[in-house]
Length: 296
Image (cartoon, rainbow, N blue to C red; front, side, top):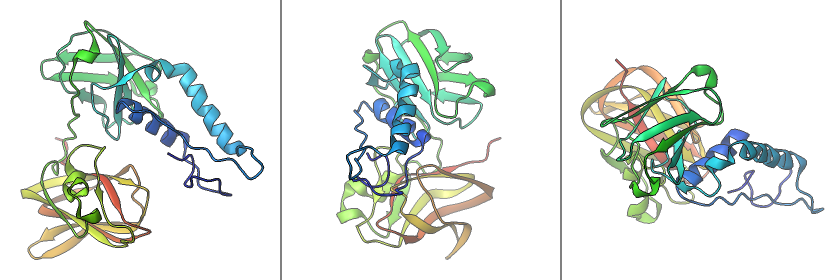
């Protein structure tokens, strides 16, 4: 991907933050991929100084924590918007890119954890049961960029089949419809926005400026938080709506969504929810659309 918005160099182009760069690198490695980071030269052949500075920041981070990236494979936990994992031999590196709560819960694995440590500083409380793995780190040691937990197992991690991270989204797997689908392709259908898989997406045709995504929860459900991950930052005006009888009632209005939109609000109870995109610079694309119930 590009360090700014354009593949070629452009004056005053919007550059990605260090957080965006590290997140992408970690999630690509966690997805068992390779990352090519495009940096275009200026007309005189030099790389723009601010881009050089960003690359050096990434290099500084990799000098400290590169063991969790270089020569690793992705998994066993499939990457999400806030977590990824890599492994090497008997070691799993859990990358926590954002903390959804004081404790994170990973799916169960067949191997036993025999030791744990925190590469980025501090200590972690790790509890493994047949139901899953709980990890907590004290707040002062939760890193803004990436908190890296090292788990040592009693056998090779490569023997473990990749497992998905549950999001607890009420919308996961529910029936969806949309006003537009890119080339009418099932691989970009609206269901891809609620499949708990950040590698798939609902996409719309090029030139689309308005679109909607509707989720049928099957029965009235109560939620007070929404998370949306949008590709390419194209949305400029949108509203979130709940169906009340035959009418759509707007409960959130906004402008930008971006890769990590999270909003908490007074509880809403409804069966049908709609993301109504009123204005976009080009065809909107949504990686994930999640609705979360109030915590007890």
